[in-house]
Image 1 (cartoon, rainbow, N blue to C red):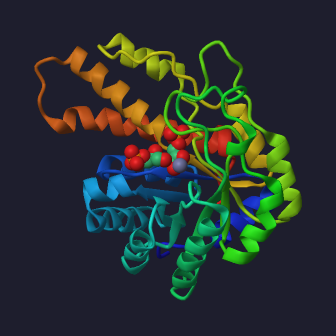
Image 2: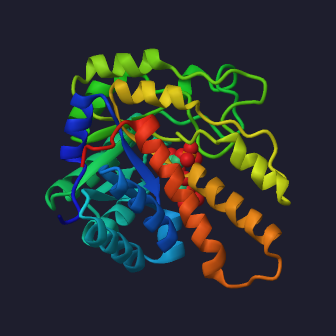
Length: 311
Ligand code: G3H
Ligand code: 13P
Ligand code: ZN
């Protein structure tokens, strides 16, 4: 099966009450860890590349790694640009074989967000590529969602119909209290997501796929392992997995996870060097790091997203 768009994946996910995992990729071991897990449990998967990943690893290397993963697994795999911030970047990915792009103009005014998203949609759709857009801004990494992330940063449900109609986007990322990184909620506070906003958006856009960014759950055992082996991570708190499961049952069809992969990889490598201080073969420490990513992705697919067996 060639690299696919997310259209069919999202249609089935919406109807089936589950979500597709969108995992960020930066190198071969990450691509392998994710796709080996997805293949074992027969899950469709989205591999997403940020602007930073593309600058780090090179567009061609990343697309070829994803093509190799598709050839090895035969899975439905979508190759997606994460947080594209300009028409030129989206165009480069569309021209270069991506099947899906995100144009993130959420920090711009409503009208400017519509104009840029529309421009990307026109270019993408003419070439068979789908577009994710964003409305509302995710809470900042240091924000405590209950208090400091005011309603203005959440998506306003009353805007979504006009936005989707005027842009023609294929999926919409909304802000309901998640944020990027490992420090999503203040230690001692109760993580909360605005499911009321999600449901109101879904009511206004029946059947339309919603995307949740900033969805790492930041497992404490990874943080503890990092700190037990020389790290100094302060109180890191992610989105509880039962909330992600709940979002997947509702209108959320794509759940973005990056930080949890970073934590799994870093915890494993730190532990490896503590236990093998004289080793210096990159294969020796990247192998368990890849295995840790694989175990984490398998857990997300089976226990959180519910997309196992859906490939
Ligand atoms: O949402 C951002 C992703 O975690 C990608 O992060 O820009 O550091 O590659 P990055
Ligand atoms: P996390 O930092 O919570 O993993 O979010 C990743 C993300 O949203 C990528 O777009
Ligand atoms: Zn994101």
